[in-house]
Image (cartoon, rainbow, N blue to C red):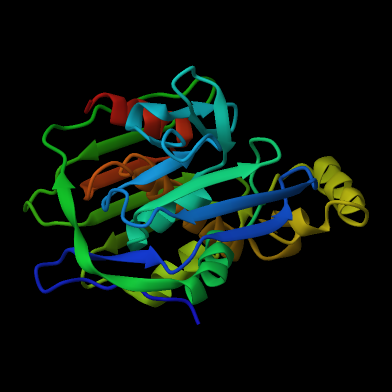
Length: 294
């Protein structure tokens, strides 16, 4: 059974540590063998995640800074200090930071694409090797108001701001509109009063599938060969009613938002506390809106 996030009486997130280092193997986005390792840093610096570079222990752990979270074509990436991508699609992983996972070093290989797993699958695999710590992660409220940004070709806006009532936690309003009746509005609140069932839906939300019939059948064909792991982790509009598809799409949009917030909260013992309004936004609008706060 997966561990559930816990909060202190003051509303802080109780930290969760690894009992031992864990390597999870699987297939990456393209169906190739891949692995991701979460290494127990043995108290190297409670309150951070690190990039495990694989060098000698005295040099191998490097902070993952907010400016190293970037948006590339249709995906979020983590880059090193030379702007070289070392992990693609980290949002399925960094959302675990908001659940309390702390003091770990992460690495993936053999390339920069980790196993393509749902966030909930990853958390379930890690849970037997996790334990609650004796300290907590504090909320760090944003101090200025983000400015909505517009993506190229298709309008999309993300606004990041402080909570109107100065409350701690994360509040998300998400609106998506893919046409063909795939429209959905959703609200999600992550704080001491959160709903585990609602959070679980987000953690296990599949990726948005394409609406093109040609691409869908191409994916089915490839899925019958070396891509079956990926096909089942995508929500395909062709396989279910539009109202269910729209809700799944919106759950995954909220996952992307939470994963991004986790990715920019990896240094120190503070998690970003904010209100986010996503109006048909995406990775690029999230990153640009956050840059306005830096």
